[in-house]
Amino acid sequence: MKILVTGGAGYIGSHTTILLMEAGYEVIVFDNFSNASKESIKRVEKIVGKDITLIEGDIRNKEDLQKVFQSHQIKSVIHFAGLKAVGESVEQPLKYYDNNISGTINLCEVMTENNCKSIIFSSSATVYGEPKTTPIDESFPTSATNPYGRSKLFIEEMLRDLYISDSSWKIVLLRYFNPVGAHESGTIGEDPNGIPNNLVPFIAQTAVGKRDYLRVWGDDYNTPDGTGVRDYIHVVDLAKGHVKALEKIDTFNKVMTINLGTGNGYSVLDMVQAFEKASEKKVPYKIMPRRAGDIATCYADPAYAKKILNWEAKRTIKEMCEDTWRWQKQNPNGYKDNE
Image (tube, rainbow, N blue to C red; front, side, top):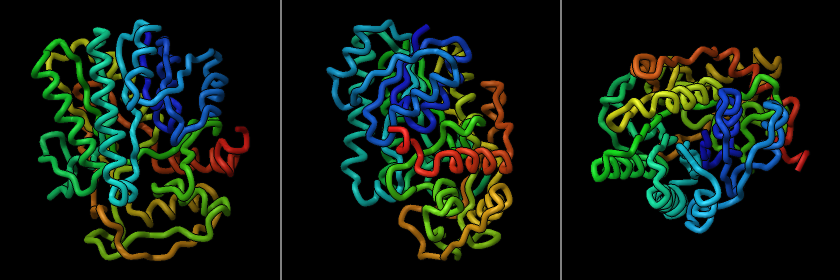
């Protein structure tokens, strides 16, 4: 069974590709490498001991997509391709709407033309906006506090409308919280371009000496230590959620919306302390003003994922930090040393 993984060379996509191949699926990776490296796929091939079909292309280009579907009998699509930085989306909203929304429209049109109507979409907890309470379950009202979150929310609504127009579609919307960690081998992990937008890569780069200090965006939130609280989930647990969704997708008779999180909230300073313990390195930090688009507290109620997918996150904050540190220590400059 051939599965198209858009953005498959990226952080979550590469880890999911490993688990898909280990589960016996044939994977076609489609990526434009705007925020990914071909080296990640070479390393995935070493981990699984098999070659991967890798196609360079852009979801905004229908011709690129048509070539994939005309050359391969695709059964289902796992759609990761998209821009994902909250801060950048506030500064460059049109770039996010063009890439994330227009690209997904192209993908769905080409899928329809080639009679492939099965998609698992990489959504985000940002669609919950500023939740009034926590933990957050799938029934919570949606809104968004930044263009990145709005792009995810618009795509969710678009896919629901697509299902209303044609109920032969099989659609799963996976809303995940904060992916961290790396493959236990330390050979693949999160490798952001330039200055990291996400907390844990920034902590790791500070610990390894690439950054002088960590910027902590705000210490005056209504949280135990004043810093933002998030639900950090190990990327391998997250990848397993996609494989579980793929196994079940044909049994669903509606658009499925499912949280993937641990149900635990950790503050920025909790993560700093856990990483210092895992790495045995000091992580200096400075408190900065709040960042536009950020919220105080966000963590999941993961009960529905366990009920529907028989999935739950297994890895602890200790494992998240240890695996991140192993990746960072072995690859201080990410994949760039091998490109």
